[in-house]
Image (cartoon, rainbow over all chains, first blue to last red; front, top):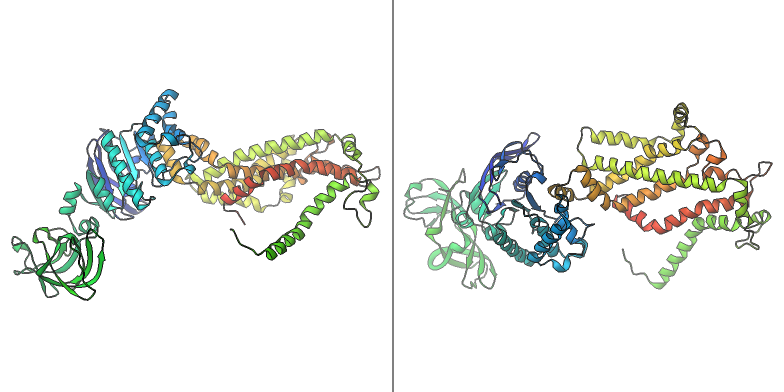
Length: 349
Length: 280
């Protein structure tokens, strides 16, 4: 276990800058998730932490030592790859013990460590099999076994669940989290799936276009997104955005007055973006009119796509909404859960 | 691809395949059967598809007329060394061109590939001069060194490079994280996975070396040093006429190991070429 600190880490490929100076502090034993859309630089950043990609400038500190120029093998890390990267010509046991073998561990020690990891991950019956004889979930577990067997200071996961089907992904999510709670090893986990990020992370790092947009506790990031990008990226379905102007009466968009908290008189006269999460729209006979476009009953809740103040918004309701497309329902945004963003910079106000 | 054909179509298809088989199988059949016929029967008309009498003495005469066992050994050990050398050179060169970033690697690879475009007939005289100055004429060195560092190895390098390019980079990255250096990654990860491609390289290199004809007749002059293709031309009577049945007995013995190797390894050969994207 070791804390990991990135200081002004930059990466350029030729003239093109892909990581623009990233600062992240990861405390000892923390589970940090780097999340962002495809191409935002999260995997590149992980590879830089791993030592698979040289950094252009900045510093990477692991447990008090700068590892910028160290080879991956000298960083005391273990990595789980998106496509598992198991050696196809080696059995599960050999795959898991391979790194120990090359670090000069004795056969007895290798056998003991492999057995320990296999017990934790339920891999004992599979130790003699080859990767081609395993299912996707089993391969994933072997890849994790290969990572934990060496007891590294830092685990790195590069979108490890993206090749699994939806159900297995949920199961493996739980297993990885349970494994982390058991081993308490500092973990950096890359994903583009914000549900994975929310459910697994101690700390979320939201990235976009090579920059860190926000770092924080998952629920803090959800409840108080730093800007419009984070607000739109974290949460499913995504936050609704309505462009308009703040007035003394409230937030005016397309002639409709949306409620604002009484304390937000400072916003009057500015062109802004009104953000409200789907679950923070509530059905209210006295509320604002919204024209239904699509109703999707989920069982436990109902997702309704509708037009409110000239903008398409999504509402998620515990009630069973039985409206037809074209009908008008009435709803009210919860004023305590309204987010206001500057229209130009996207910053939360 | 699995297709469902009607029985009639199947019969037609197999019939067509049998007809197409004739030009491939007939020469081999003719070689084997003629090797046990008396010389007068070989040119009988109509030809005998199945020999009327079997004369196996031709096989013993092969060894009486030439140091055939020695020549067999010459061909075998030269082909083995060339195969081994080519596997080593082409796998290392192919890996380097596929995986190691160095200045002008693509341009250098193109220059190497150009070696395939130069016919061996063009280079044979300068090569003769070179090996003459090195005192290697009438030795087996030219037959080993030219293929290992020449055009056959270039083709093998191309095949190996294509294979290594198709190998997932993550496997090597995982090996780097596991603590392996470049050579160990090549040796313990890349090379074992390259078995199908290496198998294909081994087969066609062995075949090429085994069948080599031009180079032996240029570089070798004594019968003790001859290789099999060259030896086959030596079965003549006092007037220079071919002793067909003895020559065909020698040819049968020459072809036999190649046929056996190819039949056993044909799956590997096809898989190897398929892995390299060279499948037709």
